[in-house]
Length: 210
Image 1 (tube, rainbow, N blue to C red):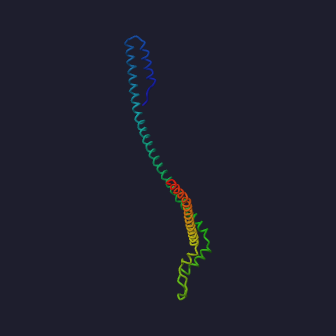
Image 2 (cartoon, rainbow, N blue to C red; image 1 turned 30 degrees about the vertical axis):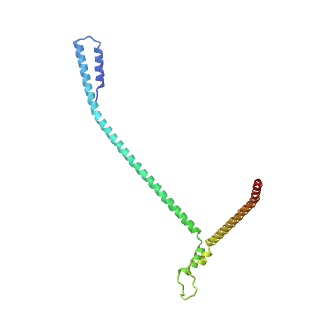
Image 3 (cartoon, one colour; image 1 turned 60 degrees about the vertical axis):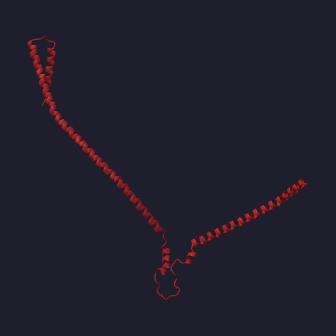
């Protein structure tokens, strides 16, 4: 459906021309025809607008549905991205812990002296396995014994600390005794100095009585 725009323009021109003319039957008939033509074209235009508006509204609804669908997909993709980031962080933490454990294990293996380990195992072998001949006298008892404990560094450090503590306690006792003697000497001196003064006061009192 199309609109005849030239016919609409001609009808409008006719009405404009008749508006300046005197009233007559011819003028009235021409004006009626022009108005009828405009009404017809208006109905045609409304019909065209109505027929073209429905597809437009349909397309608008389709666009709105697509926009909603795109928004849902974006939200789903964002959730997937967040999940992937959290999993990536967790994986990085696991790898960091594994790498740290591997590094510590490598350092421990590198710091071990195989010769010392074998020597230590040989020294413990006779205490951790049965003797080849049970009748052998003087079999060494299992480690540790008192003799081994006394030869250790901890026992030596404890002995030195105990000796130092005893020396400090003895020095404190000597200082306490010295302080007691000093206080006793001071009291004796004060007592000896006070005796002549008291005797003199007594003599003065006797002289006053006389």
